Image 1: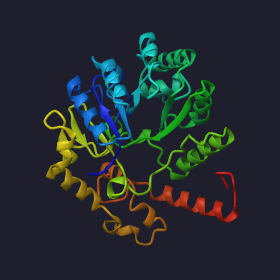
Image 2: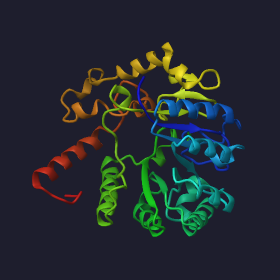
Image 3: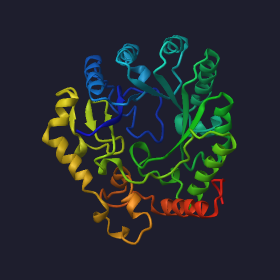
Length: 346
């Protein structure tokens, strides 16, 4: 059985927002949620499997009818947990509750430094509600908070202002790439099409990191070897709101369902033939399958990149769309090494 790094659990499909880039299209899905009993059984199995951490998401996880009970159970098991929330429903009761738990981290979603930018994606009024609640969290003394921006063509000019805004609260600004799935699928105007523009954003975030001595902020980038194709790497499972077990968040499709926690516990699913077959098929997507990689300088450290991204581009055995970006990054790093430059930009 592969080691589990993180398990991302969509405890509910309910959501009070309807974001343009939502990967699982909440709240278009029916109002379903995983039962408290099934979640407790899952947590027990993750504990037995020595999983490093759990992420609770949705939908909006705060809308699960047993949300606080779920937090209680996870923390009693001694597991690290991150709550991914849009931040609009945070209230005094919630703040007082989570202050008790040192193992909990909040990841709040915000897609701009102003209401004008953020609300295009996340809906009218969402920015002001979220910022108000971030301010309340700060006043309460809660420290373990990330605020994440999904970088798109809509908010790319807000990178520096967003970084400064979140740093003002002494919280950690983090950045992610927009994925071609869910609500964003087919919305070409949302994506940054030019790789040079994307790489400039990568460098800008790197400069902000170094200027402020923040090594914990990751510049946006395409990954290298997909962990699902490497037996030595940990896997990061995704459990959707129906209880379906998936190899990762990006392979969000019926054809990659390993099993369902409503039918069998996780340890049983790990032993079935379907789990072995799907993981072996994913693992077979190696560099030999990628015809255009033979002459690439990144082939030994990349192997076409993320299988989930490749899947959403229409060819699971193709590249993930990040080839030019990785080549620029690799050449840049080699140049810095050769010239002994300390700055992330040349």
